[in-house]
Image 1 (cartoon, rainbow, N blue to C red):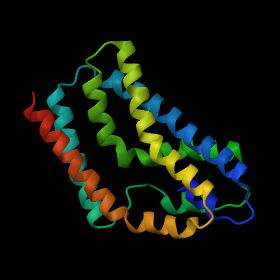
Image 2 (cartoon, rainbow, N blue to C red):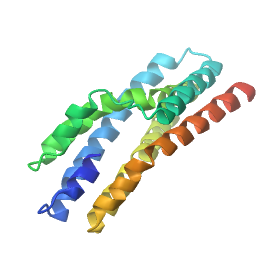
Image 3 (cartoon, rainbow, N blue to C red):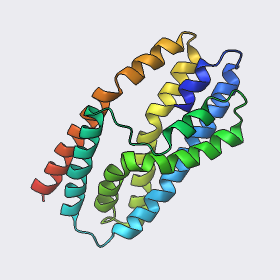
Length: 188
């Protein structure tokens, strides 16, 4: 969202878009990695079938909120107001990224919790590597949006198309998560 908002601003240099956008993405990566370490520690004793149940439940929640076009982000209006300020700074973007990590948590907690349960059963080093990989994949869409929006001039129409498809994207993500949960439970 921050990346799209910055690219919509006129008179903001591409360098500033990239700097502020990368600070925002880095904050999300770092925050989610730390949250992941905490989840892994908490989930070491939880049976794997619970990961499947969490994935199914959260997949259903994601699908339904997508279908109903309900927001899963707490305080979305306030966050949006902060994002659309013209005087965005690297520190501000990083701080906002940390804050958004906690407001995004309801959107992605089910997936992350299921993943944490699964990887908590392997060694410490592999767990930390798998958390790093998960978070790289998690932020990859943000990086793609950042570099796409920074490299084109007609970003408003693209950002509108992304927002217009959020219902379908949420429903697809929910269905995939349900399928993953069923696979985890059946594959045990």
